[in-house]
Image (cartoon, rainbow, N blue to C red; front, side, top):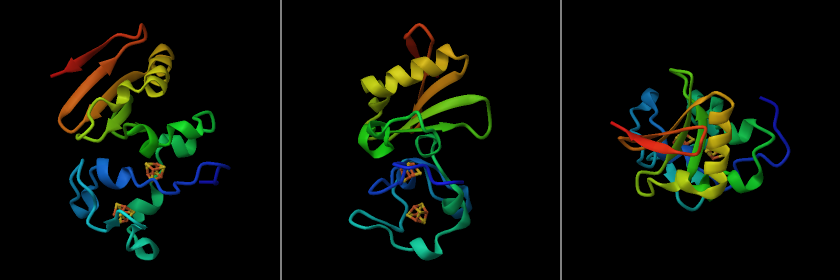
Length: 138
Ligand code: SF4
Ligand code: SF4
């Protein structure tokens, strides 16, 4: 992927906490054992290929502004690799981060564009609709 100006991960390591990484049995919502709070990935030079290849939607999408970097809003935006859904993945410790006004506005716009939009935090999930309403999914 070509680097997009202004879209470096920088101090963000949000994906290293919220995502499940099957390749090395990392559960969703817990910090990867290699992630240091002060200087990021301790094995950066030799990090697994799955980590090298991963880019959240914020990194890939020019129209998503700097304020939406995942660590700033507590929400990682991504296309679900297993479905057509568009996901807003939050830290289980702050499960309603997707209600941040900037994030929510973006999610509603994706729903208006026809996407199935789902916010997730641990085992909880909410569907967000084009009219701005939302409901928890069982
Ligand atoms: S969540 Fe996105 S911006 Fe943050 S570290 Fe992961 S890929 Fe980079
Ligand atoms: S190995 Fe490094 S880049 Fe990969 S999840 Fe762990 S801390 Fe993040």
